[in-house]
Length: 254
Image 1 (cartoon, helix red, strand yellow):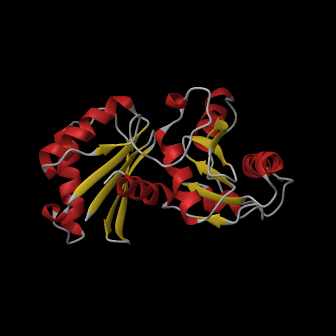
Image 2 (cartoon, rainbow, N blue to C red):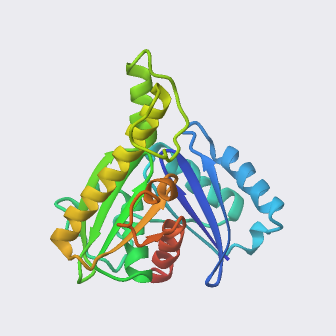
């Protein structure tokens, strides 16, 4: 079995592959204070409650956009699984040329997602990841990572609104029935929801104009289902593209 780990700013996502089957996955909150032992105990319990044995893990691969946590996760892998993880970064074979001015600036998760989508859905492609930031990534017809756009995530944006506008309450983000809200909460829900739907449609349209109107559009991340339900510009919603991408990269470096 292969344990794949994606360390993000909001969540750490883990998955276990047995051959070509994604057996299970977990999502835990990111806490930069966690130690290797904190993580080890947590992961051991996750395995226990799913009836899995850590001794059956043959390899580990991880990507991280949280530098303070990368050493702790790596040490957890060594201490509790007895193996060094393959850490996605410079020197790791990806099979995808990166046409960024400075390839080291590209978040590992963006490259992993691009490889996953290009391999499983084809190219050209647009990948939208609804995370702490919303990232839009473009892959060319020849399979090159071109770059993309980064915007503030939904949680970041709405939290700033609540903190800076004293009379606006914290609200549940839902899909409103209409754009014209009849009260403050409904107005906020409409503005936030349809604002991000419009952003999604607009940026995807402009990227497709640059790389090809036939580009496949794949979305992932916590709010993907909700936001994408307001538009038909997304072809696939796949919550596990990062996990599959990590497995693909492991196989290319085996």
